[in-house]
Amino acid sequence: MESLAAYGWTPQIAERFAGSDIHGSPGRIVRVARGCGEAVTSAGPLRVRPSGHHVCTGDWVIVREPATEGDTIGAVCAVLPRVGVIRRADASGRSEEQVLAANVDTVVVTVAADTALDPGRVERLLALAWDSGAQPVVALTKADLATEPVFNGISAVAPGASVVEVCAPNGSGLSELRDRIHGTVVFVGASGAGKSTLVNALCGREIQATAPVRQRDGKGRHTTTEREMFPLGDGLTLIDTPGLRGVGMWEAGAGIAAAFPEVDELAQHCRFTDCAHESEPGCAVRAAVEDGDLDARRVESHRKLRRENAWVAARSDARLRHERTREAKVMSRAIRAYYRDR
Ligand SMILES: Nc1nc2c(ncn2[C@@H]2O[C@H](COP(=O)(O)OP(=O)(O)OP(=O)(O)O)[C@@H](O)[C@H]2O)c(=O)[nH]1
Ligand SMILES: [Zn+2]
Image 1 (cartoon, rainbow, N blue to C red):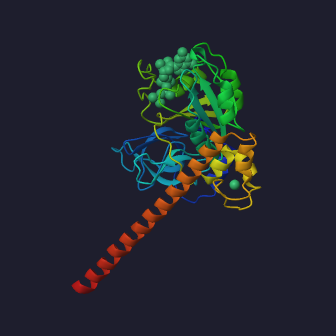
Image 2 (image 1 turned 180 degrees about the horizontal axis):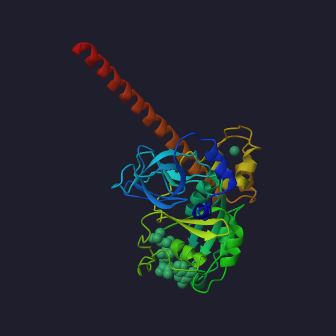
Image 3 (image 1 turned 90 degrees about the horizontal axis):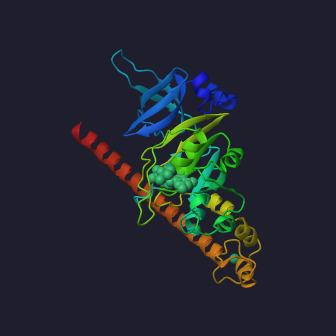
């Protein structure tokens, strides 16, 4: 398992594979592009067809070698249940989930220090990060270009996560960041936040193309278009992701609570267990805001994410119901046709 070890293969993963009776070789999906996956197996890299399975970067899979001599593409036979999934609601608004990476241990929320801090955006990313079950870490990049100190501001929106200031050009903060990450590490953040630069710097070489940020609006140019996975040694595997524009909540209730521990803790003391902290009597959260013990912006942000999460959940339930009804209709039509044609 020489080459797989570099991609996060551990005795625990081996055990999970041992429990499966599906015939084939274990592998990890390191990239998915245009409907085709690239897996790494103990025999090296192998292009694979998903063959009806839904695969994403980081998935542990059982693959079968190409069936015939002339074929170069293998097939995915099974996907191991995922542990540590970073996902968001699809940006298309079709209320579908989009998995960004699977089987992750650390989520590095990457935020550029040279642009004004958008606390709500960081809170969204952190809610998804906490929800994955992986350890969130905030990397404050471009520390060299910062015009005002954003470190304190960001620490206030990231309770429970460590914040590390990094500067890729001179390497400062890199070893501090390395000390705080473990296992499979996914980098998420806006385009131009410096994810690829950070991945390159940690790997000590240029493995991901980076592009200068557009001068005028400071927006990145979406250099990273596919997710990819890079082994770093010492059991660390890095996953770079394309910049995220919208970060919608997806069944992230537990993640939202974890991202707002101070609000969640006070909410336990509200008179009503389902208190929305709006106009309910005996609301401990509003009382704390009025006493100046709690940041009103945090409470508002928390409320917004919770509402969105509930809305998305209701919509996806509705969509599932609709699909089931449609399936039932197709089925009954098929049954009618069967009896008619007999
Ligand atoms: N001065 C300075 N520039 C940086 C630093 N980190 C990244 N940059 C620059 O910021 C720009 C964007 O960095 P990328 O690493 O491509 O950003 P990204 O988050 O990967 O962007 P996408 O791939 O579009 O999601 C590049 O021009 C980098 O050289 C830093 O610490 N200091
Ligand atoms: Zn309340």
